[in-house]
Image (tube, rainbow, N blue to C red):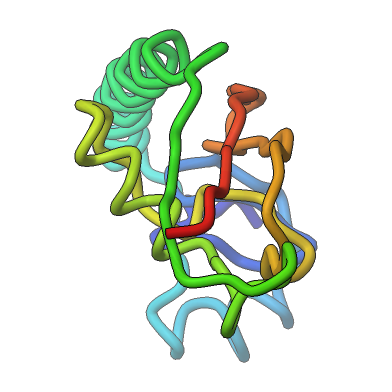
Length: 146
């Protein structure tokens, strides 16, 4: 039985793909739950348009991410905070780094910053931003005592 997936189905495929599934799986799970519909020629043509549009949108998103990564690449950001003997009162996390980057002219979401744990001492630290789709950028964060 040929079906077109209307939504992403784990271990089967992504929305818009034409799949050959067993009739029991199609009739008892995919069709009743609105995850797929019969693969008629008209539906296949519509699905191809949707997949093509999604591919174009994804390419535009990746292009924008690469531009952001290029702007972020090799950037140096300085954060001043209260510290005593090289140790901070608290820690510097992803949100603080994202705010410092925004102040320096590069706006990124804090979720893209890769940081295992908060920075708790004065110094220079290499940090990486992972935007997904294979787009990454490295930059430096300098923490200074006030």
